[in-house]
Length: 68
Image (cartoon, rainbow, N blue to C red; front, side, top):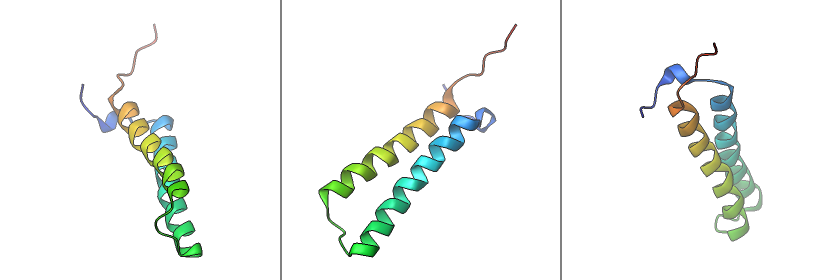
C-alpha cells in the first residue's frame, strides 16, 4: 500500500482538522495557564493528534473502489 495524494478526500480533511485542533489546543492551554507539563492536557492532546495522524494515513492509503 502506498500513500497517494490522489486519495485526498473529506476524511483526510477531517483528520487534518483534528490534528491541527490538537496542536492548537495544547499551545493555547499552555500559553493561557502557563502550564507546559500537565498529564490531563497531554492525554487530550495525544488522542487528538494520534487520531489526526492515523486518520490521515489511513485515508490516504485506502484504495478507492469503483461503483458498478
